[in-house]
Image 1 (cartoon, rainbow, N blue to C red):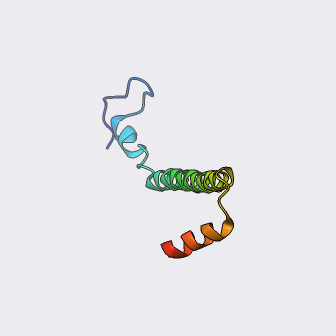
Image 2: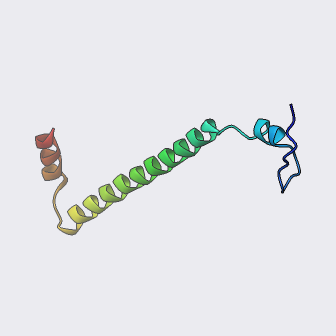
Length: 77
C-alpha cells in the first residue's frame, strides 16, 4: 500500500522512502577501527625504536662499556 503523502526532496512515497533507507554499515566501522588500531600499533613500535636508539646514544655519550650494559640487561631479566 502506497501512501499519498510524498517526500518533498525525492518525491517518493513514504513507503518507498521507508523501504529504501540504508542499513547501518557495521562492517565499515569495523574496518575503520581496525585501521586506527594498526596505525596506533605502528606508532607504538616507532616510539619503542626511538627510545631504544636514545638509550644507546646515552650509553655512548656517557662512554659506558657494553659489558656493564650487558650485566645491567641480565640483571633486569
